[in-house]
Image (tube, rainbow, N blue to C red; front, side, top):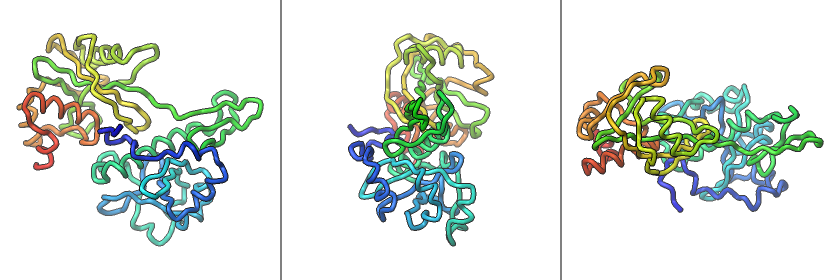
Length: 316
């Protein structure tokens, strides 16, 4: 099934049948068809100027860093290339080669649309896997060092008396567009860009259903009461750093609200035409076009006005 989520890597052959063949990995890592995605503290390697394509390293450029190669994680294969993710050594930029002046590490969140879905999904998948790997270098049960299994898709404690296995963890989060009689409630956090409004979101807690999480998060952040049966919209593997965003629409019982000022700077009800007018004027900034928040808002706009929010933004 093809996913409409920007970050979904459904196009990728994850090579499950060959991951357990350790002898194959030395060949994969040295193949001319291999592309290495380099991550440094959650940042990606991109061109210094006009970063419209990510920087992929091949074995010949990376072989002076054998530890980076040995600790690389197989993401999968696509379009004839093997993709590996690895964490940069401290001296990587200074010692890579003569092209170092033309590349840099950068948080790519705001430039992801330039890369397109394929590269965007691969880079953010690499970010999530390296984030997990860096936090599981040691066993959480006995404290011993861990080692990769299955091409880096899991880890195992090296202590033979322990042998605990670890798998990448995904943090489920709900994200919800709250509606009342055709209007939508959007809010912003203090740290966000000026004018940026988005839907409400929060992590699912232990022993809580998704529907209960929607009701609780909306109530906690805005004091808005919503119907207890929100409508599921879709999901997105949001890689900042490792969430699975589960989108919903929820109906508010009234427009009364009171913000939790520890969570939100401001929030307000928008009429659909008013929202479009403010977007066109630049007074309000839309959610990232690659986000599930944008897809939720786009569905609301389409339903209420018949207009395509994506096309409107592209023509601004």
